[in-house]
Image 1 (cartoon, each protein chain N blue to C red):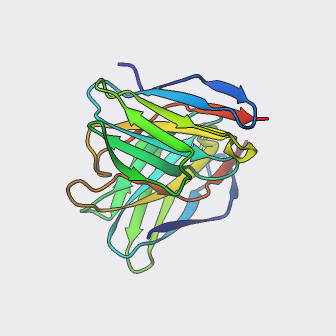
Image 2: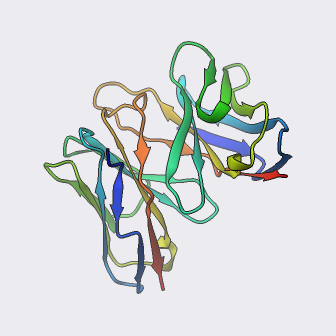
Length: 114
Length: 117
């Protein structure tokens, strides 16, 4: 079975541009969460979606937005990119919406803002 | 609010030696606790988790962790280190939520484990 797939794997953008990151969860999983991992730090929670509904949002500015599609795939959008947005963006999928169900992480999208 | 502190950003052990990675958490209510491993240029893989029940939790690759409520700790151990254990390890905490609550993992800053031959 395919795991969580994220695209693209690497991306270079210029300050002020907009970017869209994509995530396909494991088949049958209905929950998708997004995390930002800055170099040398642990991942930080950005969003969680379950059954196409936003269930939680971390402490990120409104420049960050996300959505989940009927097939449970998800997109993370970041507008007006700043140098500080350079990070590894991780997507995690799980069957349920609770933390007692295992979250499976993708390999991430490495975003570099120049 | 919950938080996680991992003591030691870098731990170095010899192959065959005991691995001990420390994690302390802060939570206003009983938490769920997790250890994840991250290999270079990879995502995170779950090693083990504590939700309820037995406080000594066994995970993959010979790792185990013990939930100690009185010490608010969830240290990760492995009796004998292998070269393949070299990676970054993250402790994470999540609050137990009700129906419709969000699923949010709060991670520590990570501990880089180096295994010397």
